[in-house]
Length: 327
Image (cartoon, rainbow, N blue to C red; front, side):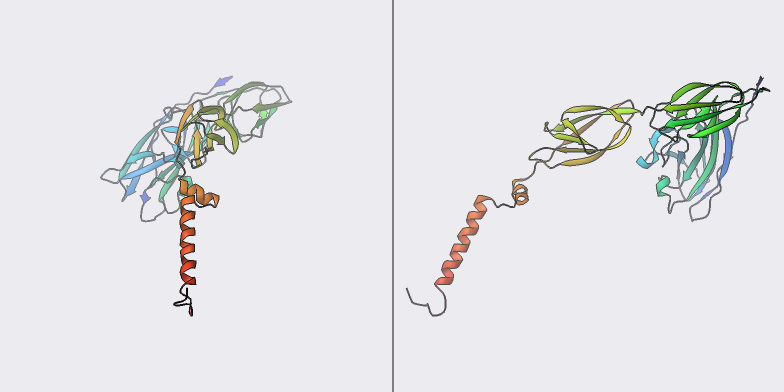
């Protein structure tokens, strides 16, 4: 058995200038361990601020802030860095203080001249840097016949870390493994991590499948007035006020309706391990809107229209040509 020790020096990466006139921006790449502080710096001409966000394994597709992986860029959350009078900016990215924990893998840091996430970079000036993060491990050398591991998960596309080393996403096959016991971790954004130990025998194939449990939260829904019918994602949920537990984390569509009030629809975001309060003020429907919706006229308006029609008919009969002076 040989223990690998690695001594790392401070890393300084210069991300290319953001040429706000439309010029191309340079990119770079680094390798680091999770928990290190990575200094980033660059130049931005004509902008007093740069907006940073991160994409990579098990993160939302459009990116997150570097200092909080639960703050989504497509919801307006970025890591803002000021540009000094020399058009220079510096940010020290502490990968151990990000509101959570990053998985081993390769990430992309995006530096943009405005608050644009990955879905709205058209017309923006930006630069990128590739960052591969991992954890120190132990290498084992043996002369025994190697084995292999077939790894899958439900749902698929989960990141797999074997003995603290990122191996890829499910489904995947690992070959040439030294016989022994391996610690395998599965992770996927929005799901709880799954840990297991896999024993690899010489010349054999070990199969492992993980069933990932989805992270859930809740909604506490109230309306004013109470008693509204509540549906969530098209399914009936009950009458307000009410609490809906064990909902998958993420976006959902909420609808409420009550006789005499305008139905309301709005998107809601369920946060893992939290119960979010949602309060809705219902707007009464006006009487005139109700009669129009029913295709009816109010009784007073109908009586007035009838009176006008009678008067018009009477006048037309007593002023027809040839009738003047006749009674």
